[in-house]
Length: 510
Image (cartoon, rainbow, N blue to C red; front, side):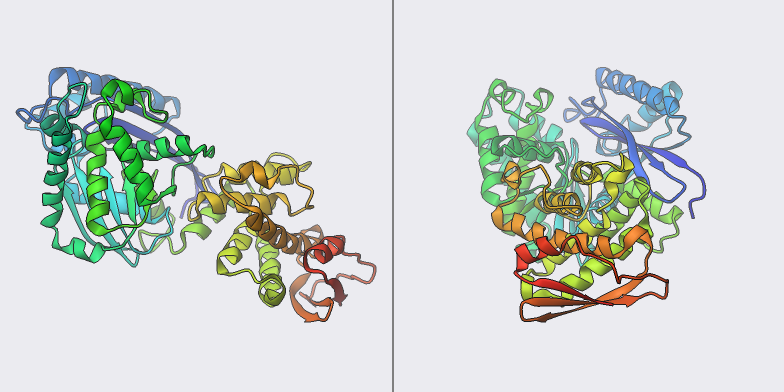
């Protein structure tokens, strides 16, 4: 179990870029990222010719790692995990390079096989996206990992030694314009690789979870074109026609034109097509109906394996992605967990027992549970207007296990737990929700509001509630917990709002 604050830096040295995250684990067991860094070093540039890392690329990479060392030293991080992937493991001079890096930077890199890279991708995804069955695709600079997940467990995986950089050099070249026949030739090559994986037949119709810089760039282009303004890419979802639209736009454009596409970084313009071909071909091959973007992969997989083991978890994956993420968020913001859990319990009891008057399904119940647990998160900023602070924090706290739309709805539930007159208007978020969604959040938030009133002063004086409909009335029987409390002079302030929503008066029974 975690007793003292811990910090860990995780470095991922790939063929195209070197990335680092610095994670902080607090004494209460919560964790958060406190810094990250990325440098496009193109380590494997030119390597497709003779499998040797080139001197210029080596110096670029060492320069970036020296910068990372300064970050790590400034945070006083002693626990460092440094991993090198395809760019180094495929290089004839990979080991001398790693030794040189150790001498000049102090980083002792572990060169992992492709199967281990796929495993860490899986751990990073499955702990942060609520999906039971899927195909994970990680297109790196020098390799591509494909993982078939069934019932949240790895069923099959493979690492193919072709990625965005070496496929671009081999098939597309560095010219200003990609000849169409070259793109088609690369698509055929990737398709041949997939034909060899007989187990991919079990992936028919499954969603593809995409990792890697090229696939994240695809999502950024789509978001910018659609006007979506939430920053997070993790768990962002695209339909096949959207993937095809961005793919066609990118592969038909000249390099100079691609540099002007909103959402596409200029330093990725020359290799983006090579990085997207495996995604296009895989989605067609498996007849996938959904692309789910993952912002988490190898680095996060390394972290979760470390964190879960240190925290005493028996397994490498959390039982419930959403609940784990929400509870971690409560700890990060020093929320009264006992009170939040009790409000959640009372809210869900009302929701379940009054299903006849709201007709909301299990998907909305999940949102109520999340919003009820997070309802006091804004107290971390200040008591006054903490419902407004809660709205902002919910939207920007990287809650795993729900979609962008669901996150917006949870933020509104959190914000409206005090009163319905929250200043933000639902149509400011019409890209994520419609009027029907907003009306549902009004119903859900009223349950949180009533529960908050009944659990006065965070006292926990109620064991639970029993609700029944009787004509134009709703009877709420209060089940005491044994703690002394009296409701004889209690007036429920939310009763008028409840009647507006459901057309029924509330009668409390003590």
